[in-house]
Length: 310
Length: 293
Image (cartoon, rainbow over all chains, first blue to last red; front, side, top):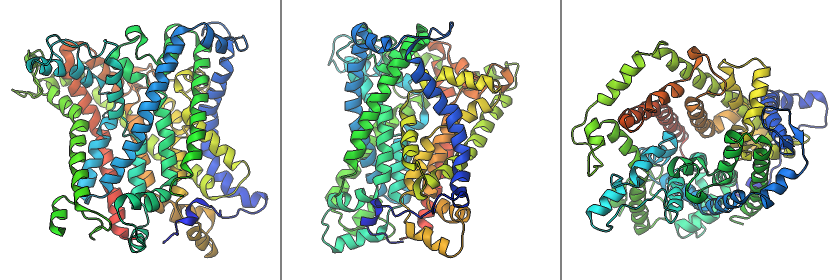
């Protein structure tokens, strides 16, 4: 089972030779069920949405082709879009990297503990994601009246004279949303890290100690991270998908629309036009634009992650 | 020194850990304890709120903990549920059926697709992989309408399949399984093939057992997603409705129902937490059995 680190990245795949049908049969059999489902229920709707982004579509009449009008409108005729874009980028660049690094560090810390403690800590850190829509708890905590948990505590201790409007005051509500997103960021990536760390090759750690790896951080950089490549990529995709899609958290906490659109994001903009104003063509165009930003980020990150530990 | 390390539960596979300083361990331990409190606090608050009588919910100044715990909220929830014309068990069955069948099918379908994508060579493999990753990044808000049209055209409205099939079609699980299968050394699979095993045998007997932590993790995600799905876009027939839809109706009664809302949220959390604990402890067991690799 001992794999030298160096062979992990360079794949010498089992050869399914030539193109003869008999040799390719297993590939077809393995891929067929998912491919059919994926095409019909995922790919076809995505392609339709990309097509709709070039149309005017109010969900009553048949879509009317209007070229790039929707895309031009985003930048020149929609101030709220620009606010949403700015907020989305700020949210993404704060919560994405912090959430990602936190997920990995916690998974790595937890991995060092004894079995029962490891299970318990995994459960505790994953609990917010497991619990799903528990935003209403945060609303109680940050409630703007004197009944809110934080306000009542601060009032009692005489730090403030009047309750602070945590969720509607534009000075505070952005930060509150960031806190809640970070709290929710131990999701799919975190569990993948936990599972990945469990399947590492332990013999390498012993030989590394003999070879002069001195502390846990050297060990992390030279031994653990290079072996975790596939899981790190998976976590990165999940982080991108989450970080650029901030919206529901801010909607539940700060309302929709929030004060002066202070926590408005692109996902909320899509919801606004798609579900409220029935302008599906424009909503699709915003979604396609968001999609393009995420793919670009993914491309940059996947190229960077390939260099870790090398 | 060893004894102190045991105190913090810090042993690794029953052997003292290499390259570890005690001070670093203590710092990490204290840091994790602080973070644990932050992570678990709102959940504790959910539990506490569900046990609060109505006068304590409106208490001023509000308290975090409950003074006189009561199960009134749960009784009220049960009463509301009993007054419905479709028996509660029916909703519970719907949600459980969709979650269990859907999870089983997805783990199969996703693992099967992940195997050739990670370990077999075929034309267009890399573009297939890229499309799978991109599909994860596309926002579902705008694909709902086209997806609805497809599901309606196939006559799946008001069936369990309207909830299960879109989940089976998501590429997330394929990506997860592929990434874990990449870590299997090729030599292991080659050796099995030299011994005369065909691809199907290699997949079932060697690949799947080796990525057990991965599919146990996938079970958690998929079950959670299906369990929480309301299916409200596709299901209008009362007898096929899902549990979350029905329970959300109970909870949406304003601030006076805050306690009942917390009770509902708590009840809904139980099955995913149970699945989480079972699958996580199985992961630990596998590792304990295989020992040091």
